[in-house]
Length: 131
Image (cartoon, rainbow, N blue to C red; front, side, top):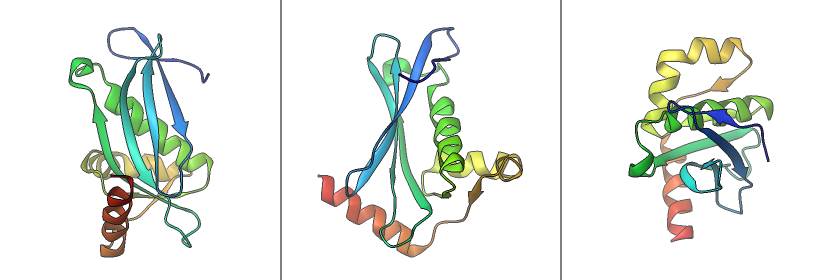
């Protein structure tokens, strides 16, 4: 299991990468006891090596206010940078984070670009495929 992080309550949480199946993958945040608390969903476009379209972030309401969404954002972005992937932030939370902290992200080796219509179509197709 990866090294735990600490949420705003001081509790240990773990973020793991659920390897993407043919369509949708996710970073998942779990409590110390393994209880799932949230996720950041993404799709890696086929034929577009080196990109990750992050399209949805969700934290269960009972875990709100603990900073888990921020932990997910930072871990997903760090993971993309480690994998040398360009992030395409369709998710409003990721887009806002990169608007505010994009310079620091790119200074640390990360890359991102604005979503294009084809990215939105890809997300729609991936979501339909998992329904």
